[in-house]
Image 1 (cartoon, rainbow over the protein chains, first blue to last red):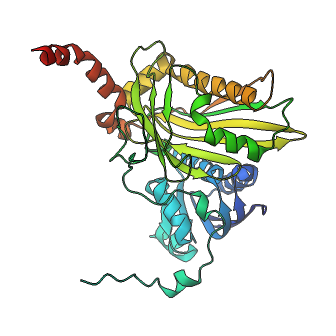
Image 2 (image 1 turned 135 degrees about the horizontal axis):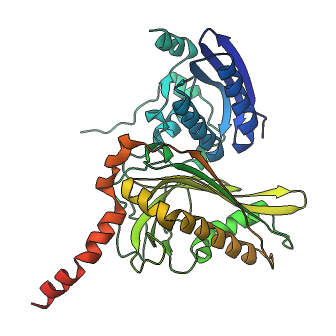
Image 3 (image 1 turned 180 degrees about the vertical axis):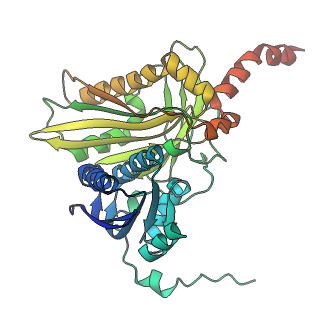
Length: 115
Length: 254
């Protein structure tokens, strides 16, 4: 199993969390810390960039749910980019795609926020 | 007419298969419980899945774990047995009808469970096996179920001991279920998982299993935009079915 890497890249009120490696329930500290840093820096929209995602189990999807709930509660817009077809299907299957905006790449996600 | 297979686009041909691909259910719009035997009512076929984001009530995360002290089983062995004998670990009074193919991704199981503490009537509903690997499996509920939930059953090593765990992310599906939840069903569901884990612990060779329970309310708000879920309510359907039973009985005699 590969470790999760979460890197924060901030640009104005839009922050990007670059998520790479494996996302499982063990990724919670890294993912939540990245989210908290983005909020502390004043982000109002957060793009979760999954271009480097290699593996995600149901624990990882559960983390996304709690992240979505936190974002909804805080009035934060959450977007996803860089998902492979496989992970897009999983977000559709679990109906997470009803709550998170999905864009093909980070540029498109940033453009959607700036419109 | 000639049927030809579609050639996938070049990018899809070149994409390497995902390591977790076989562990997830295939995308499905509506569920089918055709592969289940034994249940008298199928209230799942034709329904969509509904997770915590589609539910109505407060969002709860329940984590229950039992260290299997005295057992030499590995997490993989525990999960293999748990999947195979899932129904036998459920507390008395509830019925779980496993799919013929077993607990594998994409299969649907049916169940009869009490909608509220002390209820003599049973609510018929089911679950989709959303995910399954060697160390865990996850159920997702269908529309109409009292809970819009994901429940993950897993096992892992903590030092020299294997730990079995149930983690549920759940919120009630509609206002009536939320009311029943507040009147005791919330504790009842937690108790079902505590008893299940106790049974799992004993079956895996732990003579005196002690279940640790952690319940956290993640979101206190209610999602009023999903109050309309009530139209699919298995709880209401069960109540209606029970209340009209005398009428059906009389009609059957005449």
